[in-house]
Length: 197
Image (cartoon, rainbow, N blue to C red):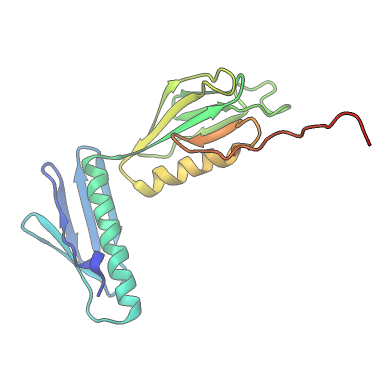
């Protein structure tokens, strides 16, 4: 019995959920989302809750039951409150800025960005907003900061992961892109012993 799947998903005020066949649609102050339930899972709106059901107790049905309920809950929360992922860029001269629907990053790669505005120009996905809080890093202790937000948890998380992958934090000085609050295990640099035997 999927304990997650059994829990009804509460619908907050200001959010509207519709189930049409296998398609679940949610609309709220942060946007609109739609998702198709995998067979044989079904869903229904009952008063102020969404109830997700499965027809039998096979292993596949149990797995899909919990997954479907979790994804429906993510949709409802996304259109009601939205999701935000904070990112920080450490490194002297590293920077981030938004131009129109493009996120521009300078993250210390030589040769790239010659004759262009930035080393990386990433199109911001539809339904996603990027807000730059601190545009430029100062050394390895004061990072540039920006936040990615949107209604779709998967799209927000995927975009944040793609940005972090451009320059993962290195363990010596901590230079690179990391999630806000992420702890990097630091290594000591090489120490050359003097003298000899």
